[in-house]
Amino acid sequence: MISEDGTMTRANLDKQPSDVAAMFDDVAAKYDLTNDVLSMGQDRRWRRLVRETVRAKRGGVILDIAAGTGTSSEPFADAGVHVVPADFSLGMLRVGIRRRPDLSFTAADALRLPFADDSFDAVTMSFGLRNVVGTSEALKEFLRVTKPGGSLVICEFSHPSNTAFRTLYSKYLMRWLPSVARKVSSNPDSYVYLAESIQAWPDQAAMATLIAGAGWQDVAWRNLTGGVVALHRATKAGTDGGQGPDLLPTGS
View 1: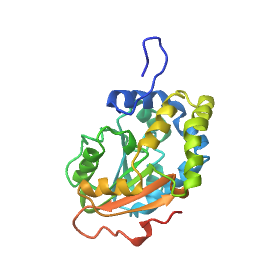
View 2: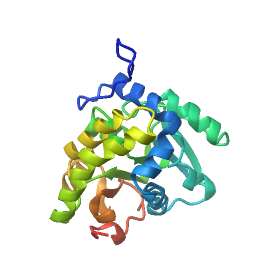
View 3: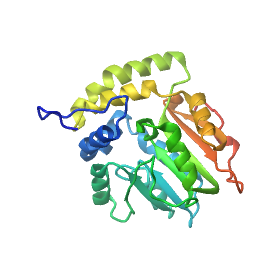
């Protein structure tokens, strides 16, 4: 959002929805470029792995919440899967519509989804759950709109499993990431929030407990890039959703 002196400000860890939405509106124009630079291109791979983890088939319907400009939805659309990219940042949606006018972008709040019960074969969220003020409430809302036997895939920053790497990564987040963001982002202060929110986020096991506590079954996770990111997958009670052993912790 904009402060009284006209400068851009950022969200805080209280994650007030209006602040979070305004912050993402501010960074929308250069969001994808900044992500590519800060992740050294890994973000594209992480999003592709989300699609592979969902195992979506042609004819399936996927809700991609916190889709932003649509980069997390593109792997589904390009594979011929019907995907609904949804976000509550109108600035991000505007950029997404210009980038991919073929996608059905929808304005939606993760805590109050504008969809009927049992609407989707899978719900995905990439790097967005960390920004929601009510994690458990959002997970329950995702469960509501998922068909029985359907799946949830959450791709989110997590905690590296190696102690030495975890220390180095922490220095990257708090020192180097904001410095790099100042060179490429339209709102570099927002990446201070990014670093703080990553450090405050639950680790892989705690995240799995939150997902199970919201009513999801067969919760498993897989580490990506040494645990910098974790993919959590779960199913909704009903017909077998096809959950397999490949998402058990791998440390990959």
